[in-house]
Amino acid sequence: MRRPMIRAACAALFAAAALPAVSAAADSYPTQPVRMIVGFAAGGPTDVIARLLAQDMSRTLGQSVVVENKTGANSLIATREVAGAPPDGYTVLFASLSHNVNWLLLGEKAGYDPLKSFAPISNAASLPMVAVTAYDSPLRSMKQLIEQARAKPDSISYGSAGNGGSAHLAAAMMGTMADLKMIHVPFRGNGPALTEVMAGRVSFMFYPIIGVAENVQAKRVRVLAQGSPEAGADFPGVPAMSDIGFPDFQDTAPWVGLLAPAGVPDAVVQKLNQAMVHALEQPQIQSRMKDLGALPIGDTPQQFHDFLVQDQKRWAAVIKAAGISAQ
Image 1 (cartoon, rainbow, N blue to C red):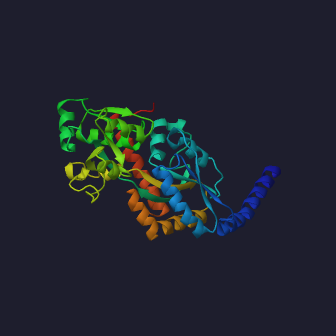
Image 2 (cartoon, rainbow, N blue to C red):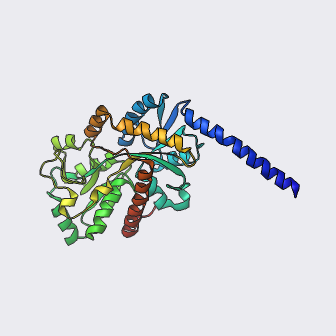
Image 3 (cartoon, helix red, strand yellow):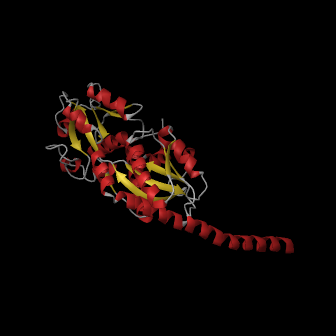
């Protein structure tokens, strides 16, 4: 009996001795570069915002915050890597809406739990979408599109960057709210989907606001509705979805935020949070965000956690109602 007791006592002593070391490491954090993993390709909205914030965070933290792109499977590869990384704050994930959605579609096959496997740091921004159709499309308003979808089920198609992506979920949410039957046409990216919409081979799609104004000016697309809380100045005369009977539709906006592996010391979480919030408060970053059509957030770890809980519930309801499954 004595040996197990001795082993237990030794383990307790080692654990107690380790606490000051962990605390000291957290206090001196960071002492080396921080890897910020992005699950999407360089140049996309998630990557652009990550790099914008990483530059300012590097100055605040006194160590480089290096963005690394680990693309594939709608950010699943990147998410799994960070979930399995040491909880020391030197590997973090710049995540997006897919963080919850992949898990909702795949369950245990996702290889992580969006809440239990991560420590939220801060929600960085949301990127409202707009509903667009071809410039010469006979559909001149969202109201007309909805009326046609009701009168002729499956006569309206919508494009997306893939199954379970933000454009797919936004259109599916609209369909469930208005009891519409439409055809989902997934592509490998927003670019190919928009090309088909502009060509008139797909009726419409929800598209991130970034770059849309240029296509409107070039008479390639027409904006039918805005997904922001209220109609914006960029598209005068175009109603917000909330104005035409879709309240809280802004919740479909893709978000981007920072998470660390579960178990990261709270002191490290707080330092990373302070660095990100500081970056989001800088006028030049806010100006760049505005150019991108992104709405800065910068909340606390607890607020971000609460947001992720509600985000998961929202998309679980939409996925169930629309019958969306992993493909």
